[in-house]
Image 1 (cartoon, rainbow, N blue to C red):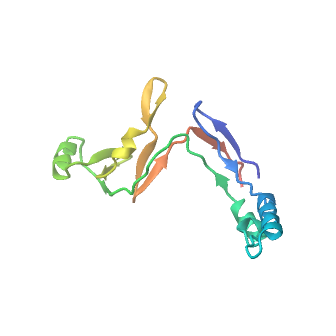
Image 2: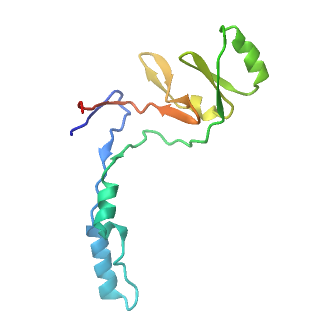
Image 3: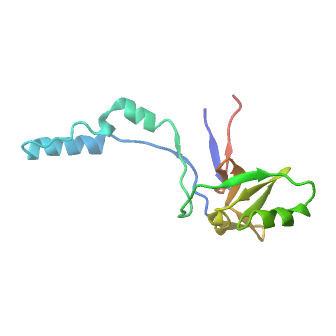
Length: 149
């Protein structure tokens, strides 16, 4: 199966398949064997075929920014009307509210969510959007085309 990634923004870093070469570990093992009396480096993980295979099964998804991500303290709330937002904000102080379809995500410690924004057609979009249950959507600036099946 071939997955195609395309950049949506100039700052996007596309995912790539992780490759692990055993050659540097072989050279280190040889150097140790030839140069040191007792020290050896024959049991490096890069020399283990199953370990290399497991490492190379997935994708490396690089981040275009340096970011410190913290666990989220969030709760999903619903309101009959938008006017209720002021009342619930008073009840739950120091929280951000994010509309997510028919409800809101109330996030108490999500200051880092709004810090990371990027420009789209003259408007600012947040890179991180609370998704519920302590998870976030992370918009990395690329799209994937995945074949059916």
